[in-house]
Length: 116
Image (tube, rainbow, N blue to C red):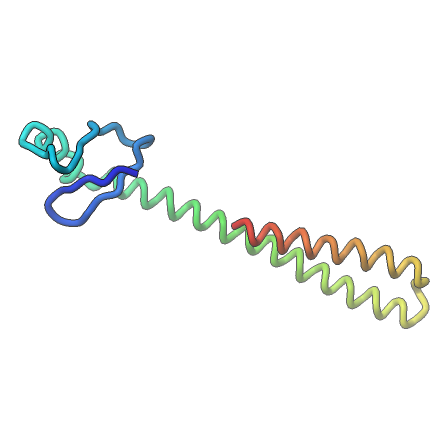
């Protein structure tokens, strides 16, 4: 991140998305100010960056919801399997395998949520 000092708020610019001259705050003179002012006056770049950030946050939110739904479904299945075992539908060996798989699904989903 490069810091760009302009009249008004401090702007943080990502070097990769906007090509600006390398400016040290001590060297800010008229020659650079004329090159920077068009960017400062036109906020379309900033609006585009904000739009991209909003899209990224929305995507993260959707991915988190997906993982939370996986956890919810796995917990519901665990409950049904427990009921089935109590009614004699599943043997203890079958119960163990199914429970292990569902707990792994829950663990994986929780780890994915932590990544976001």
